[in-house]
Length: 257
Image (tube, rainbow, N blue to C red; front, top):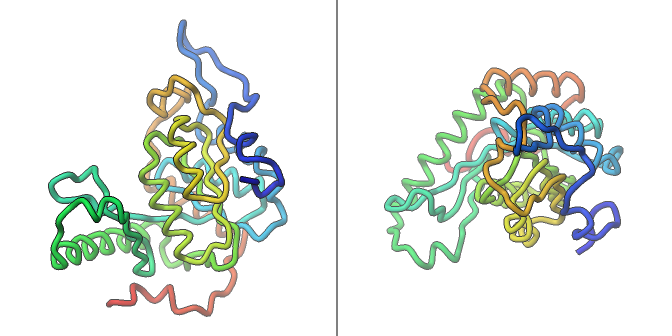
């Protein structure tokens, strides 16, 4: 599969020459903090600069990384807010996910294995959409969502372990009309990177360590990102790149309300 830069995906998914920072004996990390990781990731994506790109951070930790990517590309910054719909008896098993504008993606493989009534599934969707709306209002305030129709959407997280949230986010982004979906992250479990190739047009990661543990082990500073930090970063991004007008009816709330 070719990437958006004309290079093969195998060339993109791998280990970048980011240097390694020794913090204690036997422990090596790649990034000082999320800002550092975002700058490095932005450098890897620099050939997208000047294209019709929207950068989308996964709250909360993905947003500081995405902010630096957006800065490097001169692109607008937004968040992609999704809520996985976990099976009641196994919450970690997602039967689908909901996003803004009443977007719904269903994992048909899981849906075929579990037995949910229409009423149960409808209730799961309602609760998920309520949470998505609450998060969107809090993080974005009165700013409109960046339209994705026909654009290159770069979905950014600070690291990917199992990939379930990233996969759901990319499916929602595709459903929102993105012409191309690029998933970008500083570090990713190698088997997850391979799995995600079938979900998106491009997977871009700086590190795919063979012995992947927790995402935080690849950072010197991996303190939790607060909602207030996300709000501030989104505000800066909005001031840096104006939000284009969007005449679609999508920002008036879910279609079923």
